[in-house]
Each structure stands twice: as structure tokens, then as C-alpha cells.
Image (cartoon, rainbow, N blue to C red; front, side, top):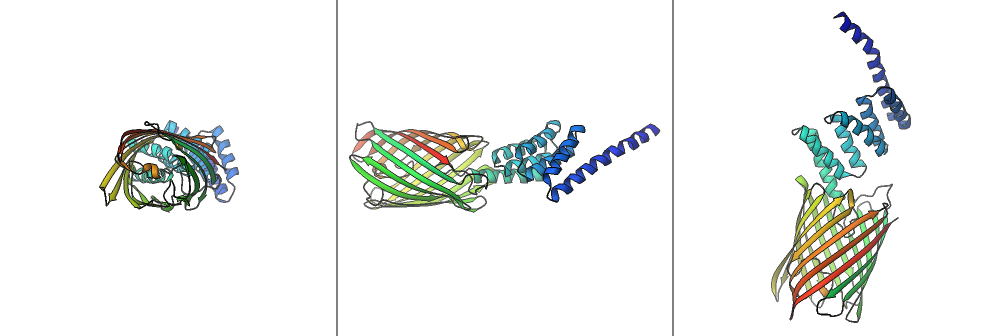
Length: 385
């Protein structure tokens, strides 16, 4: 008993010293001196490995956007004890603040394996899933987060080339588009100018699109377009849709598309999507209540595998029906039945350059024509600045 008491007495100065270091570091951080607090904790950890000090170091680094250092501090603790709750929650917050919600979801899911009923872990997972859905709104150019970050570029320019070939050797469709986008606090707004050639005819289109952030987990889609010549494009086009993230990685949407060609064309659309880790699966339908030919229904299935973030993915799309994908031009009119398949990729290079490619094939039956095979190749280059 005497030896035990003596050991405790000898250890008390060490514990007191550790507490003093942590208290001093917290005081430095809260008084506006985080660099000194980080230096103090790093020096302390060199002499005495301490999980509490490592967690505090991770927190202070996270608060001051030193994410790599903070991540190393948390991971050092979790390597020794995967169930260290403060380190788990700290790492989840760090990944969310640094724009890595997929990684935050992964950390939270692993933590729940150890504590399936932990309310804090469940809340952290729900927050991470909501942020993941918010960061992965499926935009035409996958622009990602609706809310801009001060350290990231908020302008993007793009150039796109698209060509469609037909099995009956008719004139191929060729389209060139340039766009300019800006990330406002409510979301990306994109202005696009397109020029198409088909059967010796040229046509121009001016298009304005946005995916505004309405509230956390709720987004909109607005599209307004105008063709001054209306030769190959609709004279007017309007689209609107609401996206809502749901529990357990689900997302649903409902919207409408209107186009004015020689007559009015209305399409109603709805979708349901689900995240499975870094895999995104989406089902969408288009309903065309045509007063002459009757109501037609189309559907598509889309699957994507994401790598690291929303700007790196490989995906597949399959569609059936008269309008399995978006109606954009006169080339999309007159289709009675269609079966389509496409492979698409988006890849980010050095954080500012993006390249998107799409290859698709469709077997169609059109008015007085069929079957007709259609082959399409699209390539878009984006640059952020």
C-alpha cells in the first residue's frame, strides 16, 4: 500500500504538468494566438505522447484551417484507440469543414459499428450525409458545393464539342458551346452560348441555368433559354425543379420542362436517388402529355462511382421511351420509342482543370423512320479561376 501511494505521489506532478499544458494551449487559442498553442502542443507531444493533447491539437488545427495537421493528430489517436469519441467527432467535423463530406460519412459509419446506438455518432452521420448530398448536387458540369469557399476559385469557363452520327448516313449534328459560370452565395449560375449545324442549317441558343441553394438539403434548378432564330433549337425553353435530400442517403426531385417549337411541348419529370457510399444511383422519369399522340412515359437509370470528391466520377446511363433524356433541340423531337446507353466521365486535374466526356448510343423509332441508330460523342473542357 505504501508503494502504491508513493507511486501516485510521484505521478501527480506529471499529470499536473499535462493539465497545465492543455490549459495554457486552450487559453492561447481562445485569446487569438493559435500558432503559439499549436507550437506548445507539438513540443509537448514530442516529449510525452498524450491522446488528450493530440485531440486538442487536432481541434485547434481544424479551427484554423490547418486540416492536414489536424487530420494527422486525430488519426494518431484513433490508430491507438478507434473508439476515442472526442477524436472521432473532431475528425468528422474536420472533414466536413475541409470539404470532404464523403470521408466524414466514412468515419461516422465506422464509429457506429463500435457504438451502434450512440446518439452523437448518429447525429454526426446525418449531418455528414446532408453535407454529402449538398456537395453532390448533380449539375451539368458537376460544380459541386452550392456555397462558395473563400479559398477556392468561384469562376469557371467551359468549351464543349458535341457530334451525333446516324446509321442512315443522314447529315450529322454538330454543336459547339461556350459557357461562363460564377459561384454566388446561393449557388452556381451558368450562362451558355451554343451554335449547332444540321442539314446545312445553323442555329444559336442563349441559355441561363442555376442550381440555387434554398436551405440545407433543399436545392432548386432553374433554366431559361432563348433562340433568336429558332431553326434547330426551341424558340423559348424553361425548366424548374426542386431537389430534396432525405434520410439514409436518399434524394428526390420533381419538376417541369417547357419548350416552344412550332407548338408547345410540356414535360413533367421526377427522380429518386440513393447514395451507397461513393456510389450514386438515380432513377428518373419524363411524362409527355401530348394531346395528339397521347401521353408517353420515359425512364432512365443512372449510376456513378465517385473518387475523392464530386469532380471525379465514372458513370453509366440507360434510358427507354420517347424522351429518356432531356429534350434540347429539334433532333430530340419525333422520337416514338428509344433505348439508350451512355458512359460518362468527369475528372479534375490540379484542382482547376476539368474534363468531361460522354459516349452514347441509341436505337430509335421516329415518325416514319425506324429503326435508326444514333451515336453521340461529347467533350467538355472546364477551367476554374
